[in-house]
Image 1 (cartoon, rainbow, N blue to C red):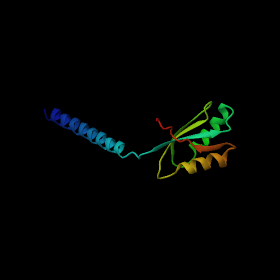
Image 2 (cartoon, one colour; image 1 turned 30 degrees about the vertical axis):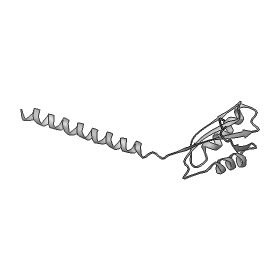
Image 3 (cartoon, helix red, strand yellow; image 1 turned 90 degrees about the vertical axis):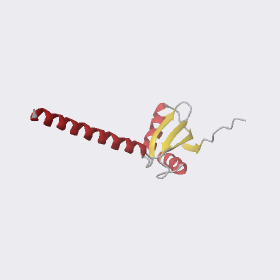
Length: 111
């Protein structure tokens, strides 16, 4: 009988530890850094390989969380941490490490 009670206590102790871990992981999710998304017009892209080159340059840029480069379309969409980088630095990275030009794509006003 003591063995059964001891086993049940052990199971409840382990289950309680799992609940504490899930609460900690939920707190970690809530502290995720806020990011900013920006669109850049990249000129000079002539193929998917060019887009891949720009993608890799952005991926290696400090502060970039995610990015995609569309070809055709010549648009780079970059999700970045504003504490670590700014659009000007993203543009500079593209222009310094590739032969392409980039500029901030301003949102269209719906008038």
